[in-house]
Image 1 (tube, rainbow, N blue to C red):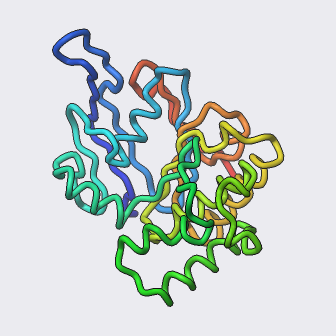
Image 2 (tube, rainbow, N blue to C red; image 1 turned 90 degrees about the vertical axis):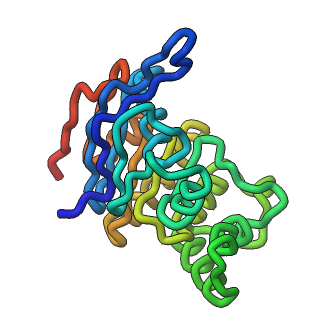
Length: 230
């Protein structure tokens, strides 16, 4: 089976010329299509750094990250921006919605950058906001939505470009139990019914309990990789 993500010998050293911090120490990881995987570990274990290098938000010091036969570690900044726009969806802890835009406008923003037609944008936005249960809030701005609703808009936005996979960095950290359960139900349904690949960085046990594969990091290294029997 083709790998969606192939991480090979990835290292990341911050402050290499002063006081080096070894955030990643030769990490190898492969993700297959349709996985629902959680990267877990204590603060400082390297899980967010690994997620950020996979997403091209941070550049590894060494090693390779192969996505769609492309080693993204070798891309220029401009090439990486274009690659992310076409291939990777992101869900962040802080939602990162644009305050002055409506739910519809936040979701369609990436499609505007991709040059999609208004007809295609409208159809995709309606489809996604319905999938996350927010079709009635299509014209509301973030300040008019609850935290759980904002994060559901963020999930719809992450899927708008039809990415190869979605990276979710602590997506439930600011949510209460009910909102977390709703969000995880939505992402699990999208994963199971549409085979969307999700890779989480999390310390939230509620997310870990729903994951089908748990990759544990410690001191910048993978110390266990467990697939949960269905």
